[in-house]
Image (spheres, rainbow, N blue to C red):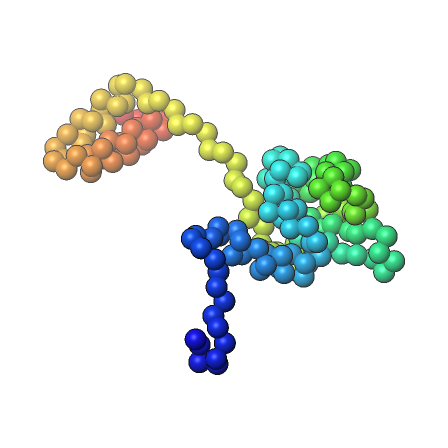
Length: 175
């Protein structure tokens, strides 16, 4: 019994998935911005594809006065805006397929958002880093010789890696 005399709400037996604990909060946050289907937010990359999801995020859905079609607002960066603009028919088609009917009649692109889940801050996935090049064996031997007197193996490995990077820079004079 609690202080107010009410019985505590019993959750059930065993563990409950985290998605079940957050379902109501996610739905409330999505509906406040016009997202009746929260799947559009949680599975954005699956709905529009990984290429578009990497450069554009849904910000809000606005409904007109007559309610005949909604406007989906997407947030993107300035350099990606032309690419997103060319993909608008494809995006609208895929989003409507998620809803199951023609819910979205227009897609707008914005580069800054006054409201949004990230408060207008664009944080898209960065481009993948190129794989590191294999160092020349002569440079590796020279870097190993320079750090040979260090007794700590972790520090010696870090110094060798640093030496390889410094010695393999273009225009670097060795010797």
